[in-house]
Length: 243
Picture 1 (cartoon, rainbow, N blue to C red):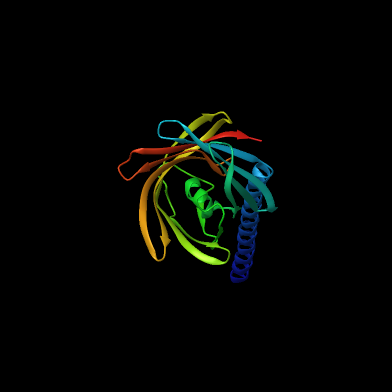
Picture 2: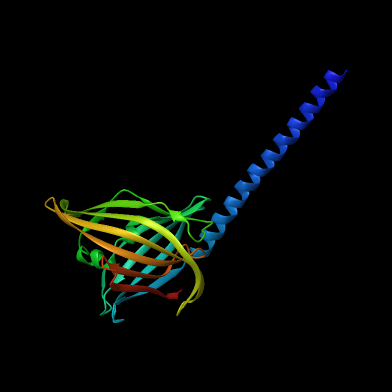
């Protein structure tokens, strides 16, 4: 009799545990879906205009990102590089993906505008590699590295290859940043980057340090600064407008 009661109690308890686990699982899935739907809904249809400046604050042009919803978790982003005279000198397409745990940005979007300008009349192709920004960022957090290789061709003929590596990504602090586009709650993220452009198999690496103020609400940075390997400021990019 006691044995039968124990068996019944064990079965009841197991059913209760399974029910709780199932509810937690689907609760997490629902939260993930809501996070991604909120992100995609917020950025889709938006045009973000960034101003580029040199170390002295002089305008060197601007960069325009236009986001379009691809599906429930993906946004396609078209970028256009405008020089200081207002002329379009290049652009490209990339993707931002929300997987429920992180916002993942296509690393082609991290290629400096000055480099894109050099190859404005050429075709740029490369595997989609993504840099992840966890949905739950915290100060002191170490983020994953990233790398991308882009092949550059002209009329079907290979011209050169661009390689970029981003390492030592660290969330330094949380702070509010105000620009002409508004005020944003951001995380300052610092990292080291190495870029190499190979032509005829020969390439000289360029090492830079960078800081970006990433706004989770936008899934993009609001401001970024680049420095040479001696920590001398090279340039600034700041969000100027959202339309």
